[in-house]
Image 1 (cartoon, rainbow, N blue to C red):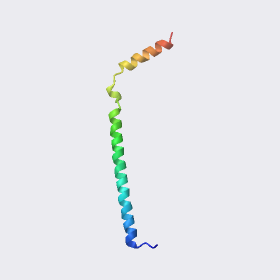
Image 2: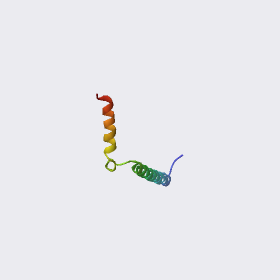
Image 3: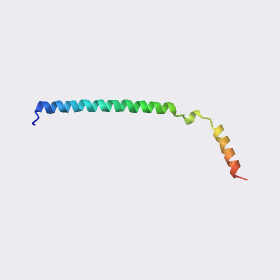
Image 4: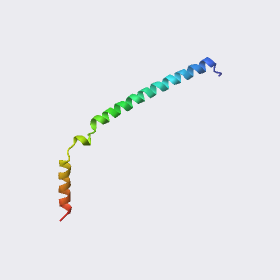
Length: 65
């Protein structure tokens, strides 16, 4: 089966459109995943050091005489 130049061009344009669509939705999904992750993460600047130091004191009291 021989392909005409017009048919080859049609296949090329169809594949280009498909590729652009796939890349577009991959970018949308990546952006959505990134925003979900950022909503779940807690910044260390928003936490207080007091609870961490309190736990560290309890741990050191267990192991030091």
